[in-house]
Image (cartoon, rainbow over all chains, first blue to last red; front, top):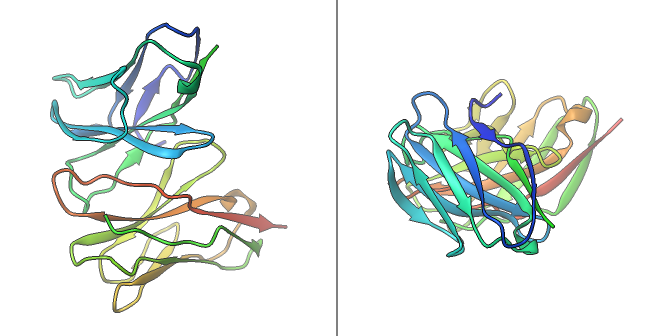
Length: 114
Length: 111
């Protein structure tokens, strides 16, 4: 158990809908990362937050947004869903955005868009 | 972030040491070498990381060459449960540092 908690574990929704994925980082961790893993793309970095502020952005679509709340949990919002958004979404956390630290991943949220 | 090169796949016998190589010839002085693994769509699992010196923990050893252009992850006594995709990642020190995953190496441990 990495200490990073993601909900829901599985989600099935229809095209055009909107979903919210939730992440609780490890206790004491201030930095949160979101990744997407689809069959043909591998693990892709989406976005990073540190103590409530966006720090880095990767290949995140405009239909997607995220935020980190004062209690440090984070949410990834996916809207106008398309079939191609079906993927595993991982959240990870670290004490602070510095590569000397260890980044731990949650078990992911499986999103299926039908 | 420096790019890494790993073989696509390798296998080893259960109980033997698994030595997973990684090349990172463009690594710079402030970049760490990290190893993660992913077992069948589970969350990536942290294994070990290092900057210059060799590192060992309860899971594995990391051997970094003196010029830091390559490294080897050693699983001393591989088990069937070590079958996974192993990712070697180089990450710099900095506020916006993040892990960038490549394709990794698929390790198959055979009975």
